[in-house]
Length: 322
Length: 233
Image (tube, rainbow over all chains, first blue to last red; front, side, top):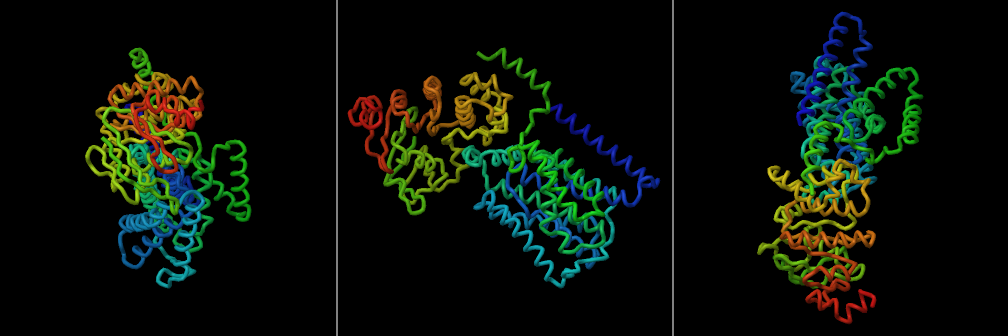
């Protein structure tokens, strides 16, 4: 336990140091506006990837509707700040909460659906949300909402991202997280151990949706404009690429994946038609060289934490065993 | 301890258990034997709440558990160790056991680990190893150890000897006897009727969802019908 705590605080300190350095570079103008918007995008994508990892990587529920949750958060918070003058932070959180409500709603069918069927249902959910936005005048229809105040600053984004990652990671490490992993590993055995599998699936969907909604709100307040088209299934797919690329079930992996995909996205901006091809090639290469990937069979290691302590325990128990 | 009265269980249109009644007394090992499709596993799933009977009653420790959730039933101390081992393959042995104690409060955790490791010294040797890399016999030990972590009063074992080498099968049965001697009542489903009848106190023979024979395990093992049908003499 001590080692985990130490690691945790080390991580926080490193993250804060990173924040400070970037802040200084931004205020002194060493990092340009382009760099800043890339950093903001990375933060948003980290939140999306880490929250999807909870649903797909940890609980093993394959979901292709993450952009749907994101759009609920984005539209809700944008409407609140644009039309109702709600302050920024409460608007973002309200967006997240409404997305979480949708998470509960979409979590319900997981009572009945598994694997491919669930994937199709979540894909359908994402598209339904998009079509509704597309056909609702109140939220701007096809042209979406524009003139959203650009209130997402580096500081704001950094702390939202840090808090999401810490909260999700703590959830994963808790008993509840173990229960979710048990569901991924073997649903029947998990049920027989007395784990309420239905409840945990819904919890995973709800928490995942909450943070996707928050990420959506933050991204809406970064780029001035949101349109239904920016939350299509390609966006969902992009988040899946981040999670799978980084390694299903690993928070650190999701962060790495999010950073990598965002950089790829930014530097390929001038060749948009190449983007999907490169994603595909990267995925194919990964499947060849790291075939443990796609549907939740990747190696998982909690064991890496606290190795020293574990060895000491071994020695003690080894000597007392018959 | 467990009284099942006239339960009927259906898989859709298929009538899987027909008016079936059994009982298990405190401290016994009771075995259910029968061919594939006789309804043995279905009965265990019904007892642990994974399936619901259409009619009939199930009483455990003098309380009806028919409409209880799986979680509530596990909490009462009726723990099902499902067929085919079903360990959490990507978790370590230790983490698997920890999940077995999922509904227990953590104060007894250390003692529970000690108890399981005493019963299965092999698991202690391998406690940091990923469960998926264990041999079949070790995985079976882990599945049983995991069930024991949940403080079972009645342990339902579904084909613990399935797919194991003959020597390991003997070990597993020896361990079941030990677990029983330590105070856990056991309801054992087995294809290996010979071994099961050796350690059991009483037995039920199931055929197409009905109990066709019941009685003292030793007597059944000697009866000609059983010998012909299940023991191959």
